[in-house]
Amino acid sequence: MDFSILFQGLFMSLNKKKDAIIIEDVTHTYKTETGLLPVIKNLTMSIPENGFTAVVGPSGCGKSTLTKLISGLLQPDEGEIFLNGEKIAAPRPTVGMAFQNPVLLEWRSILKNVMLPLEIVPNKLSLEDKKQRAKQLLSLVGLEGFEEKKPSELSGGMRQRASLCRALVHKPEVLILDEPFGALDAFTREDLWQVMHNLRKKEPFTGILITHDLRESIFLADEVVVLSGRPASKQFFVKVPKSKTPKLESLYTSKSIDMLKSLRKQIEIAQSQQEQNK
Ligand code: ADP
Image (tube, rainbow, N blue to C red; front, top):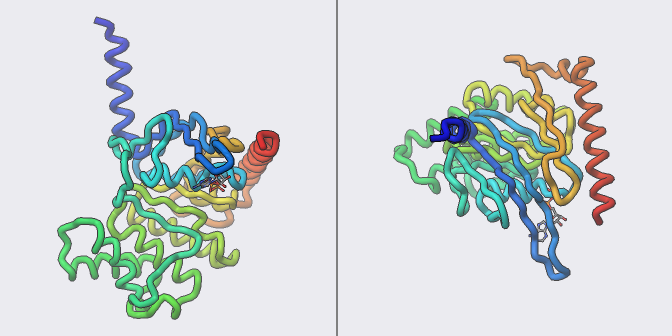
């Protein structure tokens, strides 16, 4: 018996258990009226349990497509995606999502908006438990006292805080954030970064963040992956050391500045490659 193969298999299966998201050699091509559009090609990456990875890359390289593949809304043409060891073969209600424009329902209070996933995703919580869970999250993001307000009575930053709570209320297997802070002014955005850190500390979750903001990527994520120009594959990645209480000032240290420079360089490479592939 070849023990090396046995050990290799055992190692791989242990690894699969440890990583919450595994993207294995994934390729996806859109079939459009004008022909085939290869968007993702042989992409391999993984995110450990409670890890938080930022994905950056040129506009139109396939980042949103990747989030749709992870949430099961799209199926890859080739390769496989695993969520907590299970192959994704259909849309997963246990994935939490937050987008640039938080779509909150105006006829529901903030509390009821946050409770919505608990009404959709099967669970054993009583109505009172659901309320408590939603209230607990709202208080974590500083929205205590705003539970009965309607979305239009809140500022953009507050609505985004509520939207984060809604995405997390059912303890999703993974939280997908697609440019969640892109529409906010710089100061509100930085406030929200701190809120995210606080949330992660109190409510650890596995997350993937799509962003154009390199400072945001290194401030929030444990790892930043740069995608190549379309069709996207993993071009470059960097691990970001994190302190327990990250401060905005950390973005101005020489280490952070060097990291931002090399990420910027990689994006430029990806951009020019995408231009050439057009
Ligand atoms: P990104 O999020 O990086 O900006 P997307 O994943 O949204 O990129 O899109 C990648 C490419 O795929 C773009 O050229 C876009 O126009 C195209 N695309 C996105 N969705 C579809 C679709 N449903 N059908 C055909 N083409 C699409």
